[in-house]
Length: 310
Image (tube, rainbow, N blue to C red; front, top):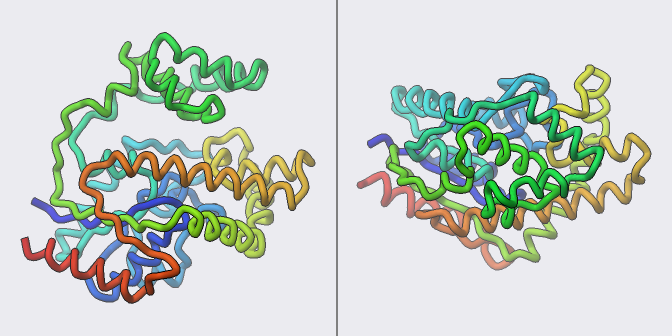
């Protein structure tokens, strides 16, 4: 069975850094499992690897779409599996790096994704309804058709709420049932996740937001708007981009926007913790003030060496 290394965990935990460090030891090529890094011109807000780092270690599924092009988990599944086959055929080790848990699950397991294709008309109708009457009205539509998603999705998580409604309309089944499907693992995978003390991780998130502003996040969003990319695009609803757009509209000051983005990113990290806590087979690597980077790398190396021998 094909071996696939996975490095995951919450945002700002240092996944990419660890993958690059391990690439100095193993013949790794990185496949991004990040739902935003596929887009060109969106570098700072997605914390994308630098051109120098991508020269050092080959990266796949980065900068393959324009911000107004459609992108879905089913396309990720297809392209990521093609990348795994290509990397393996050249005697190298595929390394999945990212924090989009459903993408990783879709790659590692054999279960259908194409049973509910995107319905752009429905999506637009529900977005307009949310704008006119508030997201809670759209969220309420899940109450009878998908009670589990109704309970687990926040009304403001409009993208996932709409997807749940769209899925039910297409299949007459709740999307929440998919996690109970019997899944067959199609790769021999080792899943490593970096584990931080929650307070320390939140401090890292705050520092990263400040750094993103210093690196030119506002200018990056302005450039996207000047290039003609609409704020209504799914890509422009990503974390960091929607907050800057609010600021550019005069709805918040820069200081307020930083605080909002820090808060939203911490909430996102919390949701990631919840997701990964339920995933089978993840090995958590503790990291933080009481552990050096060399100790983290050595622990990962020991696990990878043992796995490669099997």
